[in-house]
Each structure stands twice: as structure tokens, then as C-alpha cells.
Image 1 (cartoon, helix red, strand yellow):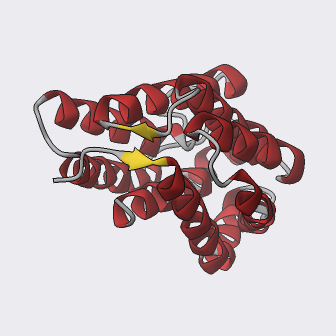
Image 2 (spheres, helix red, strand yellow):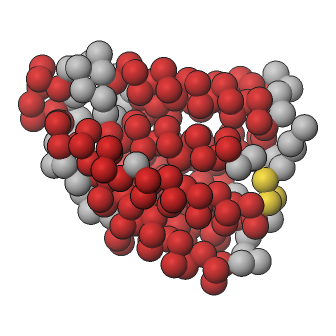
Length: 210
């Protein structure tokens, strides 16, 4: 039973996240090309590669500092809306974990809640608008319910990833009302949201590395 995630594990998770985004870069860009600017995968890969370049220098730092640096790096290197949104998410999560060298399930829930709050504040968005929140919010609800019912981290994260997968599928059925995709209105129906998809990948990596 896994009970905590350490600061050194967070660094490895971020490296694995960068590798996954790089691997899926073309697919994310293809998704984005269908409904928006066509640069989501390219921008996300650039940002996470920049994060990786800083990680060795963060060895021994607390989790809050690692996530704050990650967020600041994403804000400064990721183009489009993804930079401010993901950057704010990581910075808010970092603030929730300030000074901690390991986190348990409830710490992860609090960090996740702070991250979502940051995205909502920055993007002025909510669920049902075909954004990353449509995978992140159901995942958060599943994680919180799992941890509160006594699940270990891996079990709770497994439920969270399943909820995020369902959320990505849900984005295919709805019209975009936020972001660049909202410009094409009804024509966005039937297309998978790239932001919800990249959020799912990050959650999958977290699960795989716990």
C-alpha cells in the first residue's frame, strides 16, 4: 500500500510527464489543429522540456518549491492559453504543499483542489465548456472520494484516471464555449479537447509512477 509521494519521486514524475508529453506531442497538436490553433502539443512539449532542464537543480528541495518552479517555467515557456493555465495549476499546487518533503493522499487532494482553483480563476471556466476541467474535475472528485473512503494512493488514483478518461470522452459530445475552440461553435462537437487530453496524460503518468 502506497501512503506517500516524496520530493525525489516528484522530480521523477515530472521527468516522466515530459517524456509522455513529448511522445504524444503530434497527437495533441493534431487534436488542437481540428478545433483551435494547432500548437498545443508543440507548446506543451517545449514547456515540459524546459522544466526537465531545471529539475536536477531542484534535488533536495521541498515539493512546494519543485512545483512552484515547474509552474513558473511553464508560464514563461508555453505559448497560448496552456502556459498560464498549467503554470498557475502547478504554482497553486506548490503553494498548498509548501515546505513538505513528502505528501500523503489528503495532501494530494488539497494540491489538486488548489490546482483546479487556479485554472478556474485564470481561465474563468467551469466544467461542461470543453476544457481541461472536464477531465480534471471528475478526476479530483474520484480521488477525493477514494482517499476519504480509505483507499491507498494507487487505488484512488486509478479511480481518478478512469474518471478523467470518461471526461475526455465527454468532451467529444459537447460544444466548446471557452477558448479558441469556442470560435467554431457547433462544429467543435465530435472533437476531443486537447487540454483535457494532456491533463489525462499527466494523471496517467502520476498513477504509473506511484
